[in-house]
Image (cartoon, rainbow, N blue to C red; front, side, top):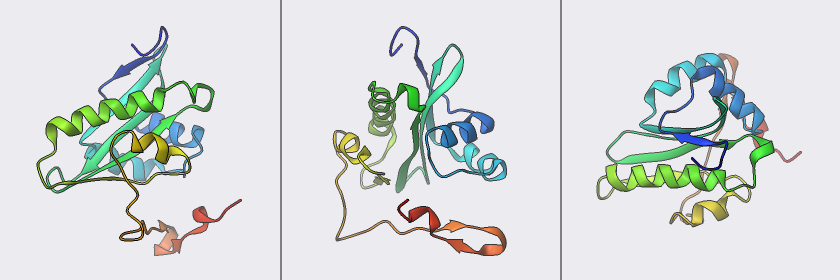
Length: 151
């Protein structure tokens, strides 16, 4: 138990909760089809539950040998600022420490002030040596970077 009303379980949410959580946390939305394809490829994931409902999540994806990426760290807005992101990261970090082979890369993309949390777990910014590059796939193969524009 994390608090009297929040429990961490070592299981990633299902498709519906995943899509809902991303939206609730203000993350770029994913389609149900994309989520259905992606979630079975989770190497390790956790969920935070309050009264049986998913209120937080995080997972590790990758090739299970050379590359591991932490993704989908999310907590519903009304519970943010209570250390729940730290608890999710601690669980993911413990799994990584016992499962990742020597020489493997462990990566993530830090949005905004989340970089301060990730630093506590040994992550450092790789720029200018390396930078994150991305686009979102749209209909008919159109590439979009609209999600990177400041409001």
